[in-house]
Length: 223
Image (cartoon, one colour):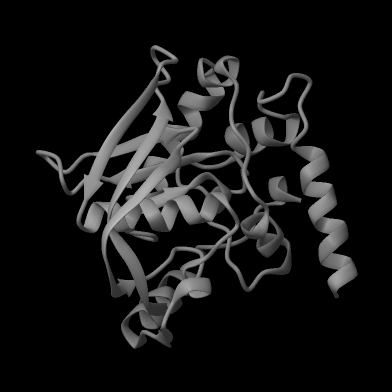
């Protein structure tokens, strides 16, 4: 089994190498264009998906950030995380099958609480008190956990319009969301950090209802 996972990891890494460093690969372009507006979300209990979720993500080039593929990917990720099937507060590119450093986060700390996309994101600093709070994950359905997180973060990312690096200091629950989504980009899941993990009966029932309606089927474009 370990050898199988290693071979899959090598295949994913090989497929991520584009003609130019940081450009979208043919596989990534296929995922972006062939997916529905609500994209399939990778789950840890699927062996093929787990390889994607455990693979560290790479930066995108300026060329990629100016591409139609990037704009489409952001739009579809935002549609996915806000869909009734997912109803999340954040999503990362690996969760839709693309190992790039891109997250979409619900900014509870801003007027109107907008969802925003952050390409080439890095957490430059963690600060403040550490406390454990409840977390769930679109890629670990029906589960919840208590996870220790810092109360503040300093993030940096590339503005896709100007290609200039920007920074922001974020506190509170939004800082927790950034830490959770940033972990995905390094192949880390909240269960790796959690003090405890448990099954949510409410989430399990909701998941079962959507599955009965035909949601969550793994698409062929990820193979």
